[in-house]
Image 1 (cartoon, rainbow, N blue to C red):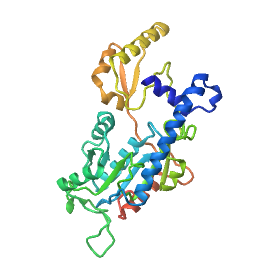
Image 2: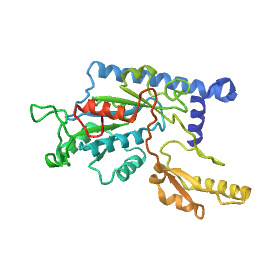
Image 3: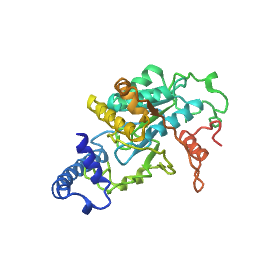
Image 4: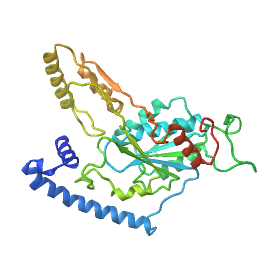
Length: 328
């Protein structure tokens, strides 16, 4: 399966199909094209069902911020979700993060660890409206857009004095761009600056989940990997997003490490993503005595043509319609 994914990815990001092998051009691409046509049809049908209200989209009782993308794979959604959750929690608006929990919930576990000590909650489940309802019932909620007085709402002072921090004040929808069953107040789309849109074709012929016209729905587009310098490495093994490591994978990695050790007369270090480590930290211990490091990522804003971190925070506060400290 991993080899199939590698072939599909190669085709999706190939600049020139003429450089692909005859087998890929004559057999695999036509099959993927047919499958992509079926996907397009299903996507159009689903969109029509929502447009004609045959499928319902729910409005939650608190502001909803969606973080999503148009292409498959890692696009920096989780660091952005964490960034927004930290900002809201530190500003006195406890967020609820709604995520589907792919691959056993590796992203949810990572967010729980990074947000430990902050009044942020993480709800996991495919039916995110139902998950939100259960959390609202358990912890309660408040809408920061509604003032309790005739004056403009202001949370400049610590809200602990008059708000129960157990209550949920906002929802962050992780991987939410195609989750049309929930209405949102702010749509953020993440774009990979290294790969962009690939061949601009829909799945599985290309990397797009939706046509590029879907960008019109976005309120904010964030380019990540915009200034990637990168680390020096001597070898690289690529696995699909949310890959579950098997014993054969560890054997292959170990063989590669031994080859590198012989070649460079030095023990190489293995670097995996934090999500890889979270999925199965025990199996990676079988690489001993080679050292395994987990690479943690954090959103870092690069100012560009008037777009700054403070400007982004100000946009978030406008969605919430409250004055938050540090957002001037």
